[in-house]
Length: 297
Image 1 (tube, rainbow, N blue to C red):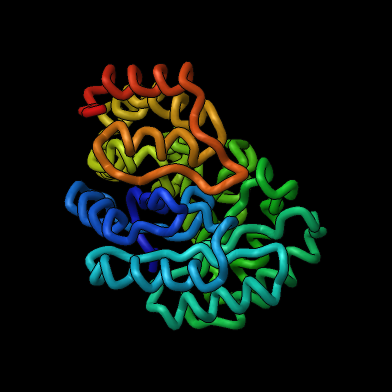
Image 2 (image 1 turned 90 degrees about the horizontal axis):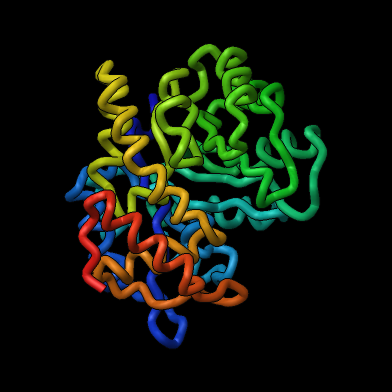
């Protein structure tokens, strides 16, 4: 059974001016997302700046999100690391905190072999009893999880049930789906590829766009699932300029700027990330306005 079908928001982590986590604003965003169609919350992922959190902050943020969500939608916790022991620790703690599933990125910097990736993911999965979504994003990790490796993991490890595919390689994704024949859920990790991936049989998207257009991001998937290819494609294409602007600088720099433009108080970013360049910010603001998104500042 799928952890979710539709659009999951890869949630940002709002910060106070001193860099501490703003849980009050996080709860406001979680409620707004759920009230506007978001199908799941992914907490402490790339967009959530988990790489700059202490272990204590990481675990506390997962706990807080679970409490805020109140079982209205699934909570999927990022618990990956380039150290297998750390990934096991974070995964166990996320399960204790009440997460419904885990998002486990491939080990970064180490650049493990495919054999090493299999052993890493098998060890992490074996440490918990909740479902796991593998996260393939070579642009950040330096390693591509090959379709054969993912297919073998899905067959051999019961709680590896899905993959977030952010390789951008539709041929590779199609190959994976042919290998797994529906036995593995595939989620788009790129907002500009929701339609093609769901058309191949994908279950939805883990999305940055959902922050600024939660209902429409949900609807891109829902329309495709209902057979309304034209309606889904029209929405996908409508938001291409916004998506490009949201990734004009490294994520989550633009989406935090966008949320502040919408009137949320999400603060700044933790170093080494910096504020969005004014030129790019102006393009992002105009793209949102053109898409009918209400910008208040």
